[in-house]
Length: 153
Image (tube, rainbow, N blue to C red; front, side, top):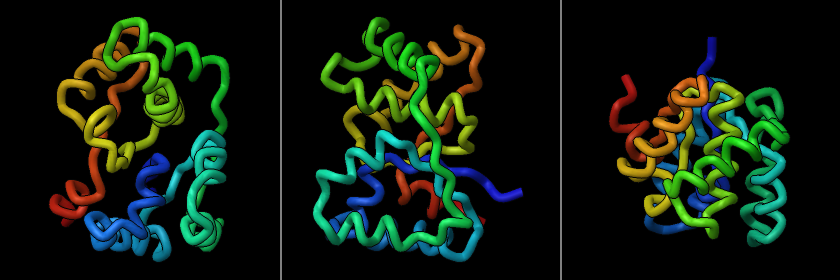
């Protein structure tokens, strides 16, 4: 069974960022080849509406059979709110919390992000997963594309 990786919006933008381009393109090549499924949310879609057209075009070019669209629902909003209430991050990071909660509730194998301040951060990850476990959800692996490629077989 193919692994399902939840991609937050930063990964799509990473395709056109000089610092992140190489690893991001390598990860998306695995999506194109069908080695992994790219999970994305309706939240990511709405965030992409504010992205440059080349990012939107790239996103739309992904093979539909290797992607999975998931929806933010009330249970996800409740979990994201809990992350804020427990001060894992501040209120201004609510959308980041929605990405974490969406990946958690949709049982993503890994959440992939280039957001090192609020998402791919060891202290934040511990906070998110502490809440996940207390609320009887699975813990979530959170990694940057670079980390995923470093440890791939």
